[in-house]
Amino acid sequence: MDLLTTLKTVHIAANLLAVGSALGLGVWAWRARQQAGAAMAAGLLRGPLLAAWLLLVLSLLSMPFSGWWLVHLVGWPLGQAWLLASSTLYGVAAASTAWLLLRLYRQRRGASARPRLTLALALFSALCFVLIAALMGAKPV
Image 1 (cartoon, rainbow, N blue to C red):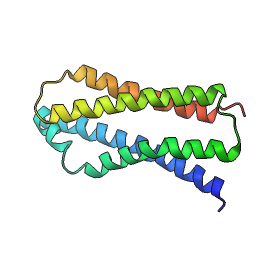
Image 2 (tube, rainbow, N blue to C red):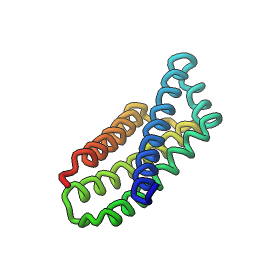
Image 3 (cartoon, helix red, strand yellow):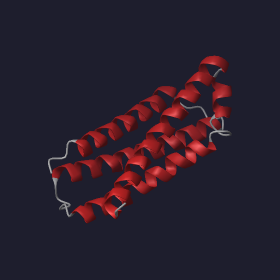
Image 4 (spheres, rainbow, N blue to C red):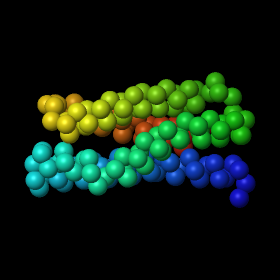
C-alpha cells in the first residue's frame, strides 16, 4: 500500500475512533443516568471507560497532523476555502471538546454543573465534526 492510501486510512480511522468513542461515552452515560441516577453516571465516566477517553484524545490529536500530511502529499494549496473552513471548525470543535471534558471532570468530582450546558457543548462539538466531515467529503478538488 502506498503512503497516500495508508495516510488516508489512518486519517479516516482516527475520525471514526473519535466519533465512536464520543458516541459510546454519551450512550453509556445516558443509560447510566436513566437507570441509576446522576451519581452512578458520574462514577461510570471515570473507571471502565478510560480506554474510550484515551482513544478519543489520541484520535483528536492525530487528525491535524495526518490531515496536514495528506494535504502536503496531494499538493493542495492551503488557501482553499474548504481547507480553511475545516481547519477553523476543527479548532473551534477541539476547544469545545476540551471545555466539555473539563466540565465532565468537574462534574465527576462533585462540583455542581449545569447539565444543559454540558449537553449543548457535546452537541455543538458533534455538529462541528459532522460539518468537517461534510467539507472533506464535498471538497471541490
